[in-house]
Length: 434
Ligand code: 9WN
Image (cartoon, rainbow, N blue to C red; front, side, top):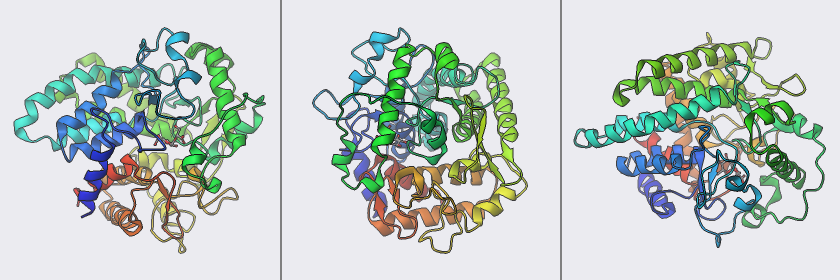
């Protein structure tokens, strides 16, 4: 039943070769949503799954960046802020030429994990075709990772620099101090549409946040989306341990696919270097006192010490740590909170002063984050915890009757955007992965 509902949702959100992240709130193609969505499609039709990724990578920038949104839905479909706020083709030669319209920032590189999953699920009769398509996509994936390992890490620290809260986890409290330092002039009149779609303001970022999000876009435009210039002058630069962990997992996935893709020695060597550098980078961010990994604010030189899902970066990356993180994961500060409806990882720990159980990335449980953690735990051979996480996650979705964007930890109630494609996609994957 759940499988049929999830499959029907993906089909309903299918816009023909690409999938809306959700039908009303997010009507375009989002980068990491697409990767999860491809994992969902892989259970229904591996060809369609490849098409999802190929379409996304057709909008890749010449720098290698895969943009966070490809605006595909057409001018009559309202979304704020739309392509005119970015004007990428008009500002930067590295952006794809019109009519392709994108944003100028990116999101965690889940794509290689999707290709790995697609290949695993490809039936023998389709293997020649899918192998050829993976071979064609692979150099683009390597370029994407190269962009993250170089332009987003000029220090060669092994850690990716995020430029904007929209690069994955919008109003996470991880960004609060960095945003508070930014003096954002009023960016001019604008009308948010997200709070029309979802009229309960307690579930979404505030106007204070939006003023800063838009001001950061202004600044990125001022620097003509040039990474070197941004690195020198731009005020919001965070070494994001979660993003970096996903890159580690993705580099390992590309290495795993190297034979299928017929990768050359040079690419294999590069991937191995980035993988090692990433592991060392994360190890350097581990705080033995708290047991969590800390993000780092490049501009202020501060460690960002907060109990959020991101602190478990080593587990997302599939790195064993001898048990400290697992104990913490089970504790009342995270999955083991006795008041939680489901034993799952919240976006922010209920022990944090800034925790808000209904507000977006400031407390609620996000299925895709738990999917990434589940994947990491499986890689570590922790089938007990992984199975629990899978069962609880399926219980949460089935119990709510909705494929929501996020869930209230104490009640398990649906929150955020409804009919969210990636929630249906990871549900399909969990259902097939007993
Ligand atoms: C801005 C689409 C996206 C996700 C992000 C999530 C949310 C958008 C928004 O929705 O961000 O990109 O308007 O809030 O935070 O992770 O990719 O599902």
